[in-house]
Amino acid sequence: MNNTTYQSNPILDKLPKHLKQYIKPQNYGDYTAIDQAVWRYVMRKNVAYLSRVAHGSYLDGLKKTGISIDHIPNMYGMNRILKDLGWAAVAVDGFIPPAAFMEFQAYNVLVIAADIRQLEHIAYTPAPDIIHEGAGHAPIIANPEYAEYLRRFGEIGCKAISSAKDFELYEAVRHLSIIKEAKGTDPIKITEAEEHIAVLQDNMGAPSEMALIRNLHWWTVEYGLIGPLDNPKIYGAGLLSSIGESAWCMTDQVKKIPYSIEAAHTSFDITKPQPQLFVTPDFAFLSQVLEDFANTMALRTGGLDGLKKLIASKELGTIELSTGLQISGHFCEVLEHRGKPIYFQTKGKSALAFREKELVGQDTHKHQTGFGSPLGRLKGINLAIENMSPRDLKAYDIYEGKQVSLHFEGGITVAGRIVTGTRNLQGKIILITFENCHVTHNGKTLFQAKGELYNMAIGEHIVSAFNGPADLESFDLMDHELSKTQTQEKDKNETRLELYYQQVREFREGKNTTISRNKVFKAVQENYALDWLLSVELYELAVANGDREFAKDIKIHLESVKGERPEVGHLIDDGLAEVERVYVS
Image 1: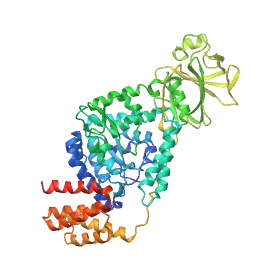
Image 2 (image 1 turned 180 degrees about the vertical axis):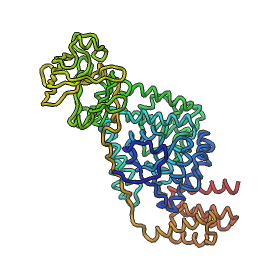
Image 3 (image 1 turned 30 degrees about the vertical axis):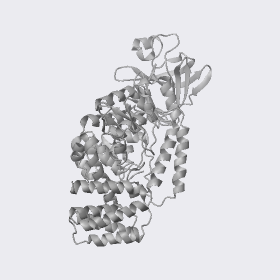
């Protein structure tokens, strides 16, 4: 259980406690000067480029959300500004379950992984980090139309039903993200983790609702383009926060496809640049496709298929009957007749609710070992029980104190003495309570009372089936343990390099102008010959101060770094180009 404290606000106060378990403190002081330099490099390059290719809301959003180019954002400062937009932000524990991620969105809360990528992964990391979440997601929510799409997506997405394999894949991806960003991880372990994910992905079977809606999330919120097909702009956070892919995606090498519901059936590989992207004409169209997709979900279709999805998921879920009665639990069995469910069964703790509020006396203490009930109409009677008036019920001997045998279509029989009935606010009967009850299916016992009362759900149809409980207070959902950050002891060399980064930062910000930049540069040449970012920062200071000879020496050194490390050559070139764009042109 998470006992972490954090600074709350009116929006965060409304979060249910099971979401708060994923929140962890940002610990701003843990960011090193190298981390700050990584943030600054990415933001300077991105903002310069994105001002030309990003949706107009991006740059406006940077200002409105208070995100600085020069400093990693402080969550508390962001929250003060986001409050005016009706949103909030929290630091979370890296990858969190997709349903939880989306549920945060439904509460207008932006989840931000507080960690920042290593310098070695400056161009892209599959792990969530503050560059992706803070610089990618936050600015666009300043657009009210897009912000409402994001909230609505979360509201619908958290109800999507997963498969048992989805959770296994989530755990594998989370593990990879942790070890990949941890310093000193054995490359063999990373390869093994990647291979394990590949095997899981190749054996997922038919995609679940959660898998499909995650595809929609990926191709819009993460990797979406907007505008005309031949000249779109970027709005997806994954593109806005990737200094490599934001440029590559604008080339003809990346296929541009008109956005449609087909995106739900287009898978993605989180470890590679995307070969195609979807383009929406405007933000309103995103909401239209989302609603079209929601119409295909068990949330809105219910029925036998919806119940079977819940059984296959092996997760806590809910069905809602045509009377509005909601049954929450782990569904384990369904009996069917002519393509319709005639009896369902949960196992373990279950609860009954109406309009997302638990019914008095129908909690998990009452239903500790499961809940089962028939569905449908009584045999030979055209009027469903839920539509019977008090007079109709009496005519069919369905009233208090009566010993009855109710024969349902499909062979279910409920025999016992009626104790009472429970009605909803509209006066419809939603529950009938029996004593000495015996429930059978074609003679086979499904339930036999042993002194306890039996509650029979009333409902002709299942109108909805969705992930999670109807009433969040019915179940203990506190099952997340915060992951421990994998850290290694820093050696003296690493600590000294961080000190040099700090000195350069303080010089640039005017906090300590007595530092000798030449001495720092010589130390880099002698002891950190393969580090490139600090030299780029020194080059910026040299150019800004008109010290041409010093700038020339640094440039020569960086050419030697490119020779030793060709994989960072484009990063060096881009860094130098940005300096010259700002100070020379």
